Amino acid sequence: MDLDLANKVALVTGASRGIGKGIALELAAAGCDLVLTGRDAAALAGAAQDVRALGRKAAVHVADLTAAGEPAGLAQATAREFGRLDILVNNAGAAKRGSFFELSDQDWSDGFGLKFFAHVRLCRMAWPQLKAAGGAVVFISGIGARAPVADYMIGASVIGASIAFMKALVSRFRRSYHLNPRTFTNVGTKGTPATLCC
Image (cartoon, rainbow, N blue to C red):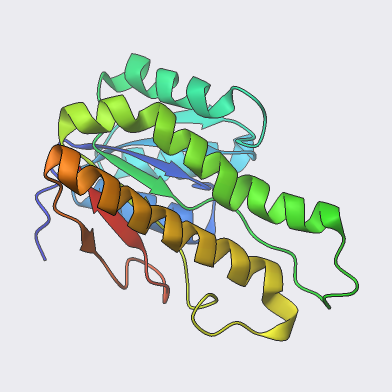
């Protein structure tokens, strides 16, 4: 499928390994330049090298997106490096598994801190660039919210919140900006990413 991504700029969170790295490489293969972010500098450097091997540019921004100011700093770094942003892929974050009575308040806070709240802030900070480019926001989720299980309560709750957030964005900005919301599936994962096209 040709998505016409040549010379677009994509920012991928959690891009050092796994699904995030896979998405980054697929976007590079489709013609995108990449901003790669995560907490592991060495792994990000390796991912950037793989992107460059595909003939595309790659900028690395090591960051803990739960830290105050980091989402804004990442958006600013993207603007400095490439002058635009076409695609934001919110992928970073994992939730602790375990029994409900063994999971602490901190476990719940950590689960929502990166996978949900950091991405909400990043959407806000990146929105001016995305709007200018007519870009897209992609949330990588999964089936946890549709089929929750006992040992994955935090993850299922975070996924549900992320889906609700994306639907609310579509509802709000479809009227203001005449958006064309779409949902892509099978983007390097068995999950169901929700995509808002600006």
